[in-house]
Amino acid sequence: MLDTQRLLTFEAVVRIGSFAGAARELGYTQPGVSQQMKALERDLKTTLFAREGRGLKLSEQGEVLASRVGEILAELRATEERIAAVTRLKEARVRVCAFPSANATLVPAAISRLRSRQLGIEIELFEAEPPESLQGLEAGEYDIVVAFRYDGQPGPEADDPELASIPLLKEPMMLMLSDDHPLARRKQIALSELKDERWVAGCVRCRQEFVNACDDAGFAPRIDITTDDNLAVQSYVVAGLGLAVMPHMTQSFVKHPKLRSRPLLPERHRHVTATVLHSQRRSPAITKVLASLKEAADAIAASSHI
Image (cartoon, rainbow, N blue to C red; front, top):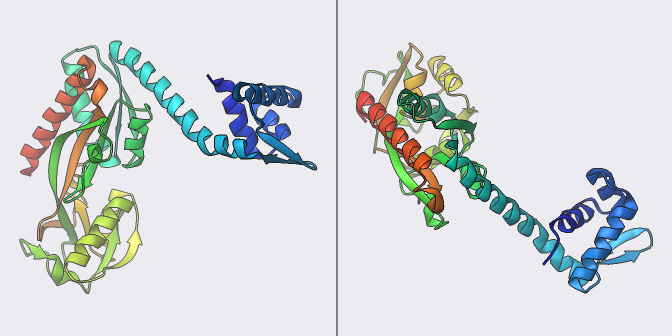
Protein backbone atom coordinates (compact mmCIF):
# COMPACT_ATOMS: atom_id res chain seq x y z
CA MET A 1 0.00 0.00 0.00
CA LEU A 2 1.23 3.50 -0.85
CA ASP A 3 1.58 6.12 1.86
CA THR A 4 -0.79 9.04 1.17
CA GLN A 5 1.55 11.69 2.59
CA ARG A 6 4.39 10.48 0.39
CA LEU A 7 2.10 10.67 -2.65
CA LEU A 8 1.15 14.25 -1.72
CA THR A 9 4.82 15.15 -1.47
CA PHE A 10 5.58 13.42 -4.78
CA GLU A 11 2.78 15.40 -6.47
CA ALA A 12 4.24 18.66 -5.13
CA VAL A 13 7.77 17.76 -6.28
CA VAL A 14 6.52 16.95 -9.80
CA ARG A 15 4.30 20.03 -10.03
CA ILE A 16 6.95 22.47 -8.74
CA GLY A 17 9.93 20.75 -10.30
CA SER A 18 12.28 20.54 -7.30
CA PHE A 19 12.66 19.09 -3.82
CA ALA A 20 13.45 22.54 -2.43
CA GLY A 21 10.31 24.12 -3.90
CA ALA A 22 8.13 21.29 -2.63
CA ALA A 23 9.70 21.64 0.82
CA ARG A 24 8.89 25.38 0.92
CA GLU A 25 5.28 24.79 -0.14
CA LEU A 26 4.65 21.91 2.26
CA GLY A 27 6.56 23.34 5.21
CA TYR A 28 9.18 20.58 5.28
CA THR A 29 12.97 20.68 5.14
CA GLN A 30 14.57 19.68 1.86
CA PRO A 31 16.17 16.59 3.47
CA GLY A 32 12.71 15.66 4.77
CA VAL A 33 11.29 15.71 1.25
CA SER A 34 14.26 13.71 -0.02
CA GLN A 35 13.71 11.09 2.69
CA GLN A 36 10.03 10.80 1.79
CA MET A 37 10.83 10.27 -1.89
CA LYS A 38 13.41 7.60 -1.04
CA ALA A 39 10.82 5.88 1.14
CA LEU A 40 8.29 6.02 -1.73
CA GLU A 41 10.85 4.45 -4.06
CA ARG A 42 11.40 1.68 -1.49
CA ASP A 43 7.63 1.11 -1.31
CA LEU A 44 7.46 0.78 -5.09
CA LYS A 45 10.79 -1.06 -5.38
CA THR A 46 11.87 1.21 -8.21
CA THR A 47 13.58 4.52 -9.01
CA LEU A 48 11.30 7.52 -9.57
CA PHE A 49 13.84 10.29 -10.25
CA ALA A 50 16.92 10.63 -12.42
CA ARG A 51 19.06 13.68 -11.69
CA GLU A 52 20.46 15.62 -14.65
CA GLY A 53 22.96 18.19 -13.47
CA ARG A 54 21.04 20.48 -11.14
CA GLY A 55 17.72 19.56 -12.69
CA LEU A 56 15.31 16.85 -11.68
CA LYS A 57 13.96 14.39 -14.22
CA LEU A 58 11.45 11.60 -13.75
CA SER A 59 12.38 8.05 -14.62
CA GLU A 60 9.99 6.06 -16.84
CA GLN A 61 8.46 4.61 -13.68
CA GLY A 62 8.20 8.09 -12.21
CA GLU A 63 6.38 9.30 -15.33
CA VAL A 64 3.81 6.53 -14.85
CA LEU A 65 3.18 7.53 -11.23
CA ALA A 66 3.08 11.23 -12.16
CA SER A 67 0.40 10.54 -14.77
CA ARG A 68 -1.83 8.89 -12.13
CA VAL A 69 -1.03 10.64 -8.85
CA GLY A 70 -3.53 13.48 -9.35
CA GLU A 71 -6.32 11.03 -10.06
CA ILE A 72 -5.33 8.85 -7.10
CA LEU A 73 -5.28 11.78 -4.67
CA ALA A 74 -8.56 13.17 -6.01
CA GLU A 75 -10.23 9.79 -5.51
CA LEU A 76 -8.84 9.55 -1.97
CA ARG A 77 -10.15 13.04 -1.14
CA ALA A 78 -13.57 12.22 -2.60
CA THR A 79 -13.70 9.01 -0.56
CA GLU A 80 -12.81 10.90 2.62
CA GLU A 81 -15.50 13.50 1.85
CA ARG A 82 -18.14 10.84 1.23
CA ILE A 83 -17.30 9.06 4.48
CA ALA A 84 -17.52 12.38 6.32
CA ALA A 85 -20.86 13.04 4.58
CA VAL A 86 -22.35 9.91 6.16
CA THR A 87 -21.55 11.31 9.59
CA ARG A 88 -22.97 14.73 8.71
CA LEU A 89 -26.19 13.24 7.34
CA LYS A 90 -26.67 11.17 10.50
CA GLU A 91 -26.40 14.45 12.38
CA ALA A 92 -28.98 15.94 9.95
CA ARG A 93 -26.53 18.41 8.40
CA VAL A 94 -27.05 18.71 4.64
CA ARG A 95 -24.93 20.68 2.17
CA VAL A 96 -27.01 22.10 -0.68
CA CYS A 97 -25.47 23.71 -3.76
CA ALA A 98 -27.64 25.56 -6.29
CA PHE A 99 -27.26 27.88 -9.26
CA PRO A 100 -27.92 31.61 -8.60
CA SER A 101 -31.56 31.96 -9.72
CA ALA A 102 -32.53 28.82 -7.77
CA ASN A 103 -30.74 30.20 -4.71
CA ALA A 104 -32.86 33.34 -5.08
CA THR A 105 -36.21 31.54 -5.35
CA LEU A 106 -36.53 27.80 -4.97
CA VAL A 107 -33.98 27.07 -2.24
CA PRO A 108 -35.11 29.78 0.25
CA ALA A 109 -38.71 28.56 -0.05
CA ALA A 110 -37.63 24.97 0.56
CA ILE A 111 -35.54 25.86 3.62
CA SER A 112 -38.38 27.94 5.04
CA ARG A 113 -40.66 24.90 4.78
CA LEU A 114 -38.10 22.73 6.55
CA ARG A 115 -37.65 25.16 9.42
CA SER A 116 -41.38 25.65 9.90
CA ARG A 117 -41.70 21.90 10.53
CA GLN A 118 -38.90 21.93 13.12
CA LEU A 119 -37.29 18.78 11.74
CA GLY A 120 -33.89 19.62 13.21
CA ILE A 121 -32.17 19.64 9.83
CA GLU A 122 -29.33 22.11 9.39
CA ILE A 123 -28.64 23.33 5.84
CA GLU A 124 -25.26 24.57 4.63
CA LEU A 125 -25.64 26.53 1.39
CA PHE A 126 -23.30 26.86 -1.58
CA GLU A 127 -23.65 28.45 -5.01
CA ALA A 128 -22.27 27.13 -8.30
CA GLU A 129 -23.42 26.49 -11.85
CA PRO A 130 -23.45 23.04 -13.45
CA PRO A 131 -21.30 21.25 -14.46
CA GLU A 132 -18.98 22.53 -11.68
CA SER A 133 -21.65 21.92 -9.03
CA LEU A 134 -22.17 18.33 -10.21
CA GLN A 135 -18.43 17.74 -10.16
CA GLY A 136 -18.48 18.94 -6.56
CA LEU A 137 -21.21 16.42 -5.77
CA GLU A 138 -19.14 13.59 -7.22
CA ALA A 139 -16.12 14.80 -5.23
CA GLY A 140 -18.12 14.68 -2.00
CA GLU A 141 -18.24 18.47 -1.50
CA TYR A 142 -22.07 18.66 -1.55
CA ASP A 143 -24.95 16.37 -0.62
CA ILE A 144 -27.62 17.82 -2.93
CA VAL A 145 -27.09 19.84 -6.10
CA VAL A 146 -29.89 21.86 -7.66
CA ALA A 147 -28.88 21.97 -11.32
CA PHE A 148 -30.43 22.50 -14.73
CA ARG A 149 -30.33 21.24 -18.28
CA TYR A 150 -32.15 22.18 -21.48
CA ASP A 151 -34.44 20.27 -23.85
CA GLY A 152 -32.61 17.40 -25.49
CA GLN A 153 -29.69 17.40 -23.06
CA PRO A 154 -29.16 14.23 -20.99
CA GLY A 155 -29.29 14.32 -17.20
CA PRO A 156 -26.04 13.89 -15.22
CA GLU A 157 -26.91 10.28 -14.41
CA ALA A 158 -26.38 9.47 -18.11
CA ASP A 159 -22.63 10.03 -17.60
CA ASP A 160 -22.39 8.77 -14.02
CA PRO A 161 -24.61 5.92 -12.78
CA GLU A 162 -23.71 6.87 -9.20
CA LEU A 163 -25.94 9.95 -9.54
CA ALA A 164 -29.72 10.17 -9.27
CA SER A 165 -31.76 13.20 -10.41
CA ILE A 166 -35.21 14.21 -9.22
CA PRO A 167 -37.21 16.53 -11.54
CA LEU A 168 -38.30 19.76 -9.86
CA LEU A 169 -39.38 22.26 -12.54
CA LYS A 170 -39.86 22.48 -16.29
CA GLU A 171 -39.80 26.19 -17.01
CA PRO A 172 -40.22 27.87 -20.40
CA MET A 173 -37.58 30.09 -21.93
CA MET A 174 -39.03 33.60 -22.32
CA LEU A 175 -38.28 36.46 -24.69
CA MET A 176 -37.51 39.68 -22.82
CA LEU A 177 -38.08 43.02 -24.53
CA SER A 178 -38.78 46.60 -23.49
CA ASP A 179 -42.40 47.75 -23.28
CA ASP A 180 -41.84 50.19 -26.17
CA HIS A 181 -40.54 47.52 -28.56
CA PRO A 182 -42.74 47.12 -31.67
CA LEU A 183 -43.42 43.46 -30.77
CA ALA A 184 -44.25 44.10 -27.10
CA ARG A 185 -48.02 43.84 -27.71
CA ARG A 186 -47.77 40.44 -29.34
CA LYS A 187 -48.79 37.44 -27.20
CA GLN A 188 -46.35 35.03 -28.81
CA ILE A 189 -43.29 35.61 -30.99
CA ALA A 190 -41.45 33.22 -33.27
CA LEU A 191 -37.68 33.26 -32.78
CA SER A 192 -37.22 33.18 -36.55
CA GLU A 193 -38.78 36.68 -36.73
CA LEU A 194 -35.94 38.12 -34.66
CA LYS A 195 -32.91 37.41 -36.83
CA ASP A 196 -32.13 41.12 -37.30
CA GLU A 197 -32.27 42.01 -33.59
CA ARG A 198 -29.34 42.73 -31.27
CA TRP A 199 -29.08 40.50 -28.20
CA VAL A 200 -28.07 40.45 -24.55
CA ALA A 201 -26.90 37.00 -23.41
CA GLY A 202 -26.63 35.47 -19.95
CA CYS A 203 -24.47 32.75 -18.36
CA VAL A 204 -22.31 30.45 -20.46
CA ARG A 205 -24.76 27.55 -20.62
CA CYS A 206 -27.75 29.87 -21.16
CA ARG A 207 -25.86 31.62 -23.93
CA GLN A 208 -25.03 28.34 -25.65
CA GLU A 209 -28.65 27.21 -25.43
CA PHE A 210 -29.72 30.52 -26.97
CA VAL A 211 -27.21 30.18 -29.82
CA ASN A 212 -28.45 26.63 -30.46
CA ALA A 213 -32.06 27.85 -30.54
CA CYS A 214 -31.17 30.56 -33.05
CA ASP A 215 -29.31 28.02 -35.17
CA ASP A 216 -32.46 25.88 -35.23
CA ALA A 217 -34.40 29.00 -36.28
CA GLY A 218 -32.04 29.56 -39.19
CA PHE A 219 -29.80 32.43 -38.09
CA ALA A 220 -26.73 33.35 -36.02
CA PRO A 221 -27.57 35.95 -33.35
CA ARG A 222 -25.72 39.23 -33.00
CA ILE A 223 -24.78 39.22 -29.29
CA ASP A 224 -23.62 42.68 -28.24
CA ILE A 225 -23.62 42.22 -24.44
CA THR A 226 -23.01 39.27 -22.13
CA THR A 227 -23.50 39.25 -18.35
CA ASP A 228 -24.31 36.71 -15.64
CA ASP A 229 -26.27 39.34 -13.68
CA ASN A 230 -30.02 38.80 -14.23
CA LEU A 231 -30.91 42.36 -13.21
CA ALA A 232 -28.26 43.73 -15.57
CA VAL A 233 -29.72 41.70 -18.44
CA GLN A 234 -33.14 43.24 -17.79
CA SER A 235 -31.69 46.74 -17.50
CA TYR A 236 -29.88 46.44 -20.85
CA VAL A 237 -33.07 45.17 -22.48
CA VAL A 238 -35.17 48.02 -21.06
CA ALA A 239 -32.53 50.51 -22.24
CA GLY A 240 -33.14 49.28 -25.77
CA LEU A 241 -29.69 47.72 -26.20
CA GLY A 242 -31.00 44.31 -27.21
CA LEU A 243 -33.46 41.50 -26.57
CA ALA A 244 -32.79 38.52 -24.30
CA VAL A 245 -34.01 34.96 -23.86
CA MET A 246 -34.07 33.93 -20.20
CA PRO A 247 -35.64 31.18 -18.07
CA HIS A 248 -39.01 32.04 -16.53
CA MET A 249 -37.63 31.71 -12.97
CA THR A 250 -35.39 34.75 -13.33
CA GLN A 251 -38.44 37.02 -13.42
CA SER A 252 -39.89 35.73 -10.18
CA PHE A 253 -37.29 37.45 -7.98
CA VAL A 254 -36.45 40.53 -10.07
CA LYS A 255 -38.64 42.23 -12.67
CA HIS A 256 -37.92 45.63 -14.15
CA PRO A 257 -41.15 47.67 -14.35
CA LYS A 258 -40.62 48.47 -18.05
CA LEU A 259 -39.76 44.90 -19.04
CA ARG A 260 -42.12 42.68 -21.02
CA SER A 261 -41.72 38.92 -21.39
CA ARG A 262 -43.38 36.82 -24.06
CA PRO A 263 -43.45 33.09 -24.86
CA LEU A 264 -41.23 32.04 -27.74
CA LEU A 265 -42.16 29.76 -30.61
CA PRO A 266 -41.17 27.03 -30.85
CA GLU A 267 -41.19 26.46 -27.09
CA ARG A 268 -37.94 25.62 -25.34
CA HIS A 269 -37.52 24.71 -21.69
CA ARG A 270 -35.03 24.61 -18.84
CA HIS A 271 -35.35 21.53 -16.64
CA VAL A 272 -34.45 22.09 -12.97
CA THR A 273 -33.43 19.01 -11.00
CA ALA A 274 -32.11 17.97 -7.59
CA THR A 275 -29.22 15.53 -7.94
CA VAL A 276 -27.79 13.27 -5.22
CA LEU A 277 -25.55 10.25 -4.93
CA HIS A 278 -27.49 6.97 -5.18
CA SER A 279 -25.77 5.79 -2.01
CA GLN A 280 -27.19 8.73 -0.02
CA ARG A 281 -30.63 9.11 -1.56
CA ARG A 282 -32.37 7.10 1.20
CA SER A 283 -30.80 9.07 4.02
CA PRO A 284 -33.66 10.48 6.16
CA ALA A 285 -32.20 14.02 6.06
CA ILE A 286 -31.69 13.90 2.27
CA THR A 287 -35.21 12.54 1.77
CA LYS A 288 -36.75 15.38 3.77
CA VAL A 289 -34.77 18.09 1.97
CA LEU A 290 -35.65 16.62 -1.44
CA ALA A 291 -39.32 16.54 -0.49
CA SER A 292 -39.19 20.17 0.60
CA LEU A 293 -37.48 21.19 -2.65
CA LYS A 294 -40.17 19.41 -4.64
CA GLU A 295 -42.97 21.11 -2.66
CA ALA A 296 -41.37 24.52 -3.17
CA ALA A 297 -40.96 23.83 -6.90
CA ASP A 298 -44.61 22.78 -7.21
CA ALA A 299 -45.68 25.97 -5.45
CA ILE A 300 -43.56 28.10 -7.84
CA ALA A 301 -45.01 26.28 -10.84
CA ALA A 302 -48.58 26.77 -9.61
CA SER A 303 -48.13 30.47 -8.86
CA SER A 304 -46.37 31.11 -12.19
CA HIS A 305 -48.71 28.87 -14.24
CA ILE A 306 -45.81 26.87 -15.70
